[in-house]
Length: 257
Image 1: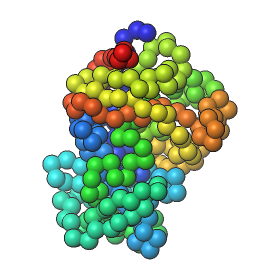
Image 2: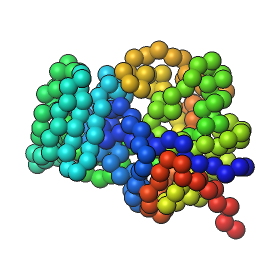
Image 3: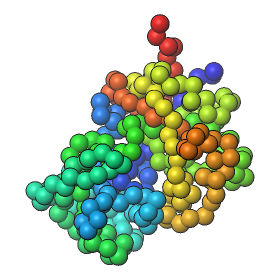
Image 4: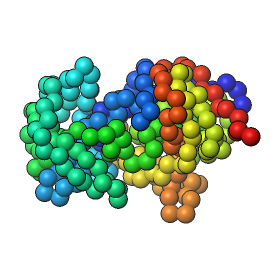
């Protein structure tokens, strides 16, 4: 394989909010710094709101820097330093318990108005508390190009809400499947590639507006159905923290003897 590079980097400070491109990303032991720090919780159902059930959240753009959370909701900006209320919620998230701290500020009122239900903004007690699988998600240009050919449309990598898109040149589609169990060096960080990522109807939502308008999941199911899951991309876990930048070399290490 030719030399690979990091083509795209992305994260979302707000779970289910718009996925944001980044030029640089720092990987800590527990995953991408600043990713999915905050989440919206329905107090009546005691559920963390998910993208597929609340696509309007994709229209909300969140930025978290220097202790200030800024969220654009309906083209209006709401920025403040989040204040913890002292209330901690123990919630079920995909079959596991996660602890979320309720945050005071202007956001709960605006999200409640947007969604038409009583919600609060929360902050995860631990990094990755509202991440479905492993902390790092990878996809490749080869796989995106195959899906684009099959679907007959351009495919925005943000639909997959991943940490990194790796430019794999002319390699075969879904070559990342073969990386499982191997170490991948990304800039100054090192990750261990794990298993594949099961996909849902989120990939059919416009990454800026949340509008439904493609049949990418159905197309993908036509050639990537594995048992009950439709697979695209792979998870990874951080084994050496470091900074990763767009354009950095991605080096796949040989399997240890």
